[in-house]
Length: 183
Image 1 (cartoon, rainbow, N blue to C red):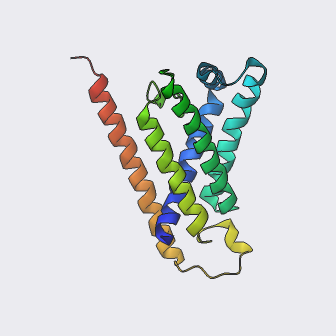
Image 2: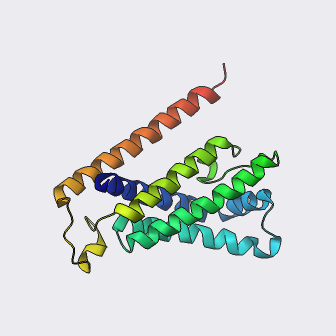
Image 3: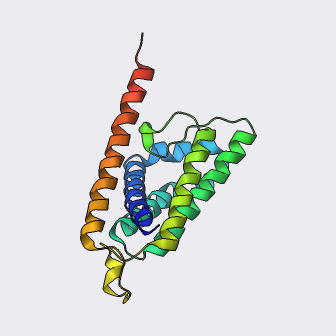
């Protein structure tokens, strides 16, 4: 489980860094997506559109760097479960709104696939919170417990996780381009 926690830490860190950067780059689009959800009034819309990407980016950087790893995992899991609850409520009422989790790269409407994906992310955050060790982590500086993984094992997992995420991204882009291409 320790290796799974380390891979999940790297993957979630990259995922939330990317999500936060995309949303910060196009706050207007993210604010419009939040408005379409229908749960946030106009009074709080700008605050949410400003705060969520910053929290995502901050927790992603903390996860990737291994800084306050358990707390960052709790933030990631909590955000994901909140979004999942909103999506379930929308789907239960038959509303299909844009996801905008990753800007224009997001699948068009939320669906039960979005719920399944979010539950996997929340489960990964739980694994990180429970089994993460201070390997290749800033937390290593002040934690006195010796990790069971070596630094070279952790570096290999970082490379493997990054490669797997890039391969999944390329496969997703290719799959999307073949589905969208005119015939």
